Image (tube, rainbow, N blue to C red):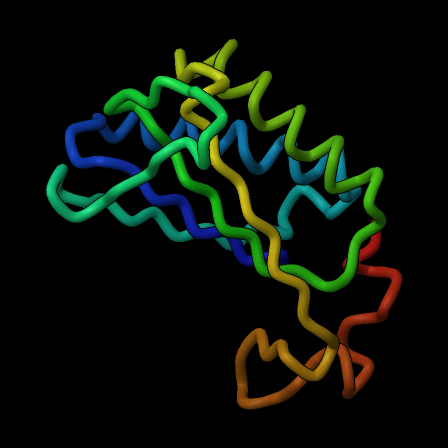
Length: 136
């Protein structure tokens, strides 16, 4: 938790996908203070004719290296979200060769009752995971 969905165009190697996932996770650890092993990521690869990412009128030139990151998380401070955006963009550019213009991020917030980590239980509600656990 947070749950991260990473959407990319087909064609990246396994090591490239692993690097994307690793750098996004490290940014999450740094910006949101989640534990290192608090990692939930799903990678979805799309054919070129099934993903459309334009620039909302900002004038960005998107490439085939575009990465769309969707984060579902408990509430986070605004400053942490802005830091996360910057860290992800910087890390993907530095370590994965993804231009800043090709990094798109969206965060959706949910609550404690919206999570089950297995066994049919809501661990934040049962006390198996503390509120402070996900804030670290």
